[in-house]
Amino acid sequence: MSVLTRRDFLIRTGGCAAHLAAASAVLPPALRERWTRPTLGTVVAAEPFGRLEAVGPGVWALVSTPLGGDFTTVSNGGIVAGRNGVLAIEGFMQPAGAKWLAEQAKALTGRFPTHVVLTHYHSDHVNGVAGYFEAGATPAVRTTATTRDWAVQKNQPEPARNGRLGAAEVVDPATESVLDLGGTKVRLLPKAGHTASDVALVVEEPHVVFGGDLLWNGMFPNFVDCVPTLFEKSIRSLRHDRDPIYVPGHGPLARNADLDRYLAMLGEIERAARASRDKGQTAAEGAAGYAIPASLGQWTLFTPKFLETAFVAWHRELGAK
Ligand SMILES: [Zn+2]
Image (cartoon, rainbow, N blue to C red; front, side, top):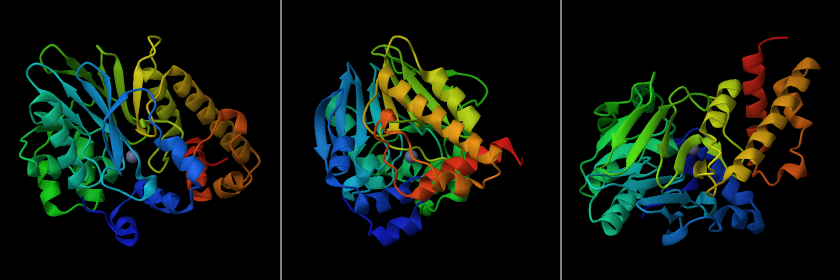
């Protein structure tokens, strides 16, 4: 396992990941604990950077715990195994993260991942994808054309990582597709809102939803590329009355009660952002005078800037008053 220095990390990463580095320095232990305790699954492997939880037959979720300062994976992800294939979800921050997940897949299922799906282009979800190949796996990598192109253009990965992305199989952005692993089917749902490149994954049995960064639990989402109304629409489209296990992009595993709290929090942000715009305030002014009500639970806010980014996204979408 190699861990970047904080300075390297801040230079080399974008999106939400950079804020995690700042957060690990300032979060009180109680908050870190809240985000790192096991929740819904059974822990089958644990490392400083995250833990792998069995959540049903043939399905495991990686819950990353970067707040201690280990940025090997940063984002959550997972493994889904069928009779004929094994899917790994996400490429993670560093190749060591993907390599580790490939080795876990081999230990748990008897084979390396045959497929990899990347949920969006942000660096903490794609930059380590070459690690699967370093482990000895030769998976087919699937994602949207937007993720493939933006990861290469906007992220700062090393050339070898770009090569793995350039060869990716493209998910049709207009319609749902199905990955049949043999006895286990995974639906790939093209979405938008967190970025224009989002894909969510749904396993029907056991019922598990991998939401990428459309879903967050216990920590405040990254609005940097967000179109807030699309974001909320996509989140609502993933909610199911059967109360599946949701694997968010960041934070512990969730159920409908967690998802509803998340939606309530986002609704409150919308209300505050609209109010600030109606008063003629800038996004920065609106965010400066705002705090998430305690009744909506704990949402780890890394810096005041993170909240401001949400207000900026709302003001951008609403347009000039
Ligand atoms: Zn992320």
